[in-house]
Amino acid sequence: MPSTHDFLERCSSLAVMGGTFDPIHNGHLAVAEAVNNAYRPQRLLFIPAGDPPHKPGKPISPALDRFEMVLRSISHYPAFDVSMMEINRSGPSYTVDTITELKNICLPGAEILLVVGADAFLEIRTWFDVKRLLSLCKIVVVVRPGNAGVEEFAEKLQEDFDSRISILQMPLLEISATHIRKKIARGEGVRSLMPQTAEEYAISHGLYSACGTELSDERFEWAKSKLKRNMSARRFLHTLGVAEEAERLAKFYGVDANKARWAGLLHDCAKEFSAAKKKYLCEAWGIELDEILENHTDITHQMLGAEAAYRDYYVRDEEVLGAIRYHTTGHGEMTMLDKIICLADYIEPYREDYEELENMRKYAYKNINKALYIGMKSTNKDLKTRGLAIHPWNKAALKLLKKEME
Image 1: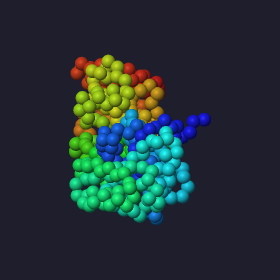
Image 2: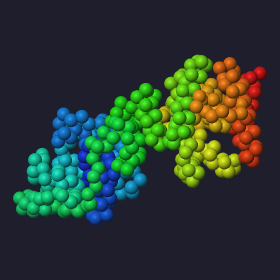
Image 3: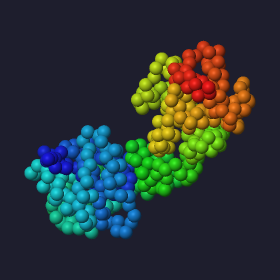
Image 4: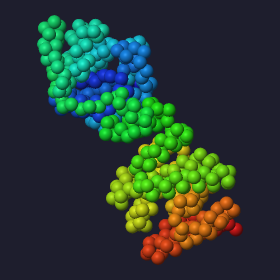
C-alpha cells in the first residue's frame, strides 16, 4: 500500500509553507506562486499545523477543516500539494520535526526550502532546536515594504549558524486571516480575499460563525440581508412577499413552513443576472439548455437560482432547492412545496394587479391545484402573445394539476 507521502519520495527539491491556515487566503497563494516562480522547486507543500506551539490556548478551527480548505484551494495548481503530517503527529507541531521527516521522505540530498514571513523570521531564534533546523534546510524569507531589519538579522543568523537564507521581496498585500474570520462572522463577502472553494467550505461548515447550513432564523436573516444588498428594491420587496405568502400557504397545507419561507426567499436570487451571465453560468455549472431555454434565457433563472442557493447561500436541503429549481415552469412531479412556491410567486401580497390575480387568490386557500392551474394558463397565454414557446416542463405541470383538480 502506498504511503501518504509517496508523491514526495522522488522529490529532489521541495518548498514548504506551514501555518495554521485558519483560513487559507489569497495572500498565502500569492506567496506560494512567488516562491514557485523564483526558486522553481519540484513541489511546493502546504502543511497545516496540528498543534501550533506559538498559539497556546488560542482557539483555532479543527485541523481537518483547515486541511480541507487548503486542499480545495491548491489542487488546481500543478506544483502545489498539501500534507497532514503535522495534523497526524501527536504533540506540538515543531518545524524541525517536520523538516526532519521530509528529509527522510524525499530523495537523498533533496533541497528543502522553508518559506517564512518576515515577522516569524525575526523570532526564529526562539524556535525549538533552531540550530538543527537551520542545518537541515534553506530559509526563504518573504519580505514586504515596511519589514525593517530583516537583512541585518539574516546576516547575523548566517554568521552565528552558518545558515542558508534567501530573501524574497513581495509587494504589500493586506490580507489578514483574523479580518476574514470577522467578515464571515458578520455575513460579509470575502471572495476577493480567499479562494471561493475555501470560503464555501468555511461557511457551509460554520467555522467562523454559528450559521453553518442549518435553515435557522439566524441564517435566514443573514440571507435576507445579503439579498437586499444584491437586489433592486422592487425585486427584494417581491422576494419578501413570496417568502411571506409561501410560509402562510405552507402552514395552511401542512407543509414545513420554514422550508417554504427559505425557498420563497431565494427563488429569485439569480433573476437579475444579466443574460450573458446566465448563459455563462449555465455552461459553467453544467446546466443543459434545450432550444427553448437557449431562446428564452430568463427561464434559466430558476435553475440558476437553485445552484446559487446552494453555492452562495449554502442551502443543502433538497426539497428547498427543488422548489426553487422549477418555480417558474413547474414540472410533472410537483410536490406540495413546489406548488406552494410557484403559487406564492404569482399571488404574493405586493404584486401589482394583473389578469387572473384575484381569481387565483380566491382559490389559493381552497384548491391550490386550481389556483396554480389558473396562473400557469394565464402565463402561457402571455407567452403565446409574445411569440415565445411553452416549455415541456410547464405542459407536464398543467397536465398534473388538471388531473389532481378532478
